[in-house]
Image 1 (cartoon, rainbow, N blue to C red):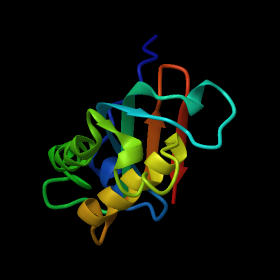
Image 2: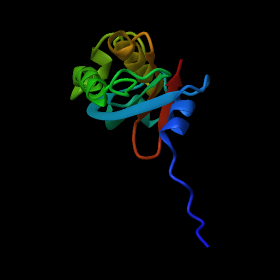
Image 3: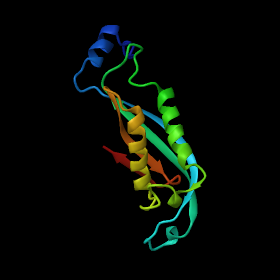
Image 4: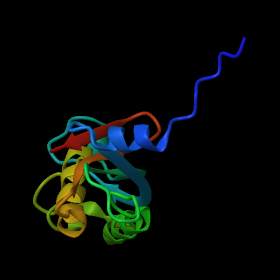
Length: 144
């Protein structure tokens, strides 16, 4: 007895793409190394220390272009790398706006969100989430 599922047909794929609630979520990951300290924090993070930060950028969209993409991964990676480059090997507390607000993972996530929204948002695609990993065990995700 053959229990294999039939291969989806072109018609099934087209019908699924036309479904009103269908959304694509694309993500790319970049990283950078930087130091920071948290003012007003009671604990080790009040002292100068560094992280190898990992940033995951998510873009969502419902419409595909003529090639069949929401947005080219290459475009996303380039924009994310350029943003990360501004923070790489820096003391974040000396870079605006982190010279005025604590460079917490939450604030860094919002910074990336604003920075990349200005570059990547289009009519049918937008930055929908940024996840900032401080280390292998701790991350924050900002969604808007």
